[in-house]
Every structure is written in C-alpha cells, then in structure tokens.
Amino acid sequence: PRRLGRRAHGCAAPMSEQNSADPVAAIKQMQREDPNAKEQWWAYCESLGNGVRDPAKHPPAFLQTFISQYQSGVQFETPQTSGDFVQVFKELQKRSENFRASWASYCQSQGKGVNDPSKHNKEYMVSFIDQLCRMSNMHMGIPIGGWGAPPAKRPRLGVMEGPMLPRGPPMMPMMPIMGGKGKGGCGGGCGGLSA
Image (cartoon, rainbow, N blue to C red; front, side, top):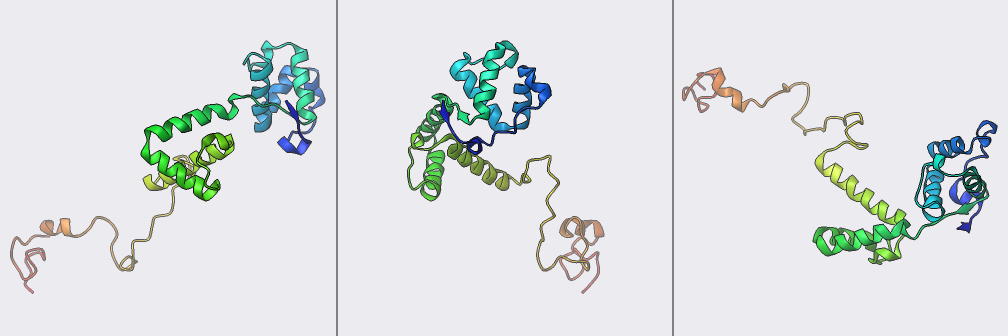
C-alpha cells in the first residue's frame, strides 16, 4: 500500500456515527456510495484478505484497519490490477488484426504512440474499450446509453420531405394497387389514366 492525499482517491467523509459501531455495515455503505472505496476494498482484500470480499467474513480489526487507512489516504494496489488487462490486450493483438489496428491507432492519438499494453494503466485500456463500444453502438444504431435510453430523434431525410408530401410507405409499390396494367402514358402505374 502507498499513502496518497485524501483527494487522491476521492475518499468520502468519515463514516456516520451509526456505522462506526458496525464496520461490516460501514464497508458495505462505502462500497455503495463510493466506487473508488469499492475498488480499494477489493484491492485490500486481494492483497491482505485472501481475496475474500465479503466484509462479514473478516474480523472487525481487519475492517477497522481498512476504514482508517482508506480515510487517511492509503491506496492499495494489487499486481493483477492491470496485469490481467495487459495479458488480454496482448492476446487480442495476436489474434485479431482489427483489434491490433484499432489499438495502434488509439495509442498513436491518445498514448504517444506506445502500443505496449504494459506501458499503460487499466484506466487507459478501459477508455480504449469504451471508445470501441461507443463506435460500435453508433454503427449499429444503438442509442447513447444503450437500449434503455430515450429514442433518438428521427433523422431528416432530405429536401423532399415536408408537410406537402405524405409520409408512410413509398408510392411505387402501391402503383399496381391503383390499377392500370400497361394502360396510359405513364407505364401503367397511373391507374389507367392517359397522359
């Protein structure tokens, strides 16, 4: 663990009086209210708690130590924090030409041309994945925020659209319904009327 300033990981205000007596509830509340506290709890458990994340399965002293260290600005890191991402990125670069090209392009524009995933932190790699997902969603027409988001406005179709023209299915497939099979001067689609 290393000590960072309070602002380094946005630690929340000290626990409320009611939770200070119950460190299990305090840890659960911290995880619900502060994503960084949750990440730090997981890192703390990985490095000192045998990977067990359930606060109820640890002694109160273990919980109190985490709470006091978190509130004083100590930040816990695990060797696997970005290591797993690095391995996945290296494997994807080997197996997918499209991934390799996208990663190289992203690193060129956002990462000073450094393509080696081990030279970047986890947040950088997640940012790349997030950009890939955004681009993919746009390409597939998925609204920003996913399918649960309100639908996007209907795109404008061009100059010919407006209140004067009917909306709905195109007229050409409806022409045979109007009559006129080969009669008239407009190829039979004018309902038998002569031009």
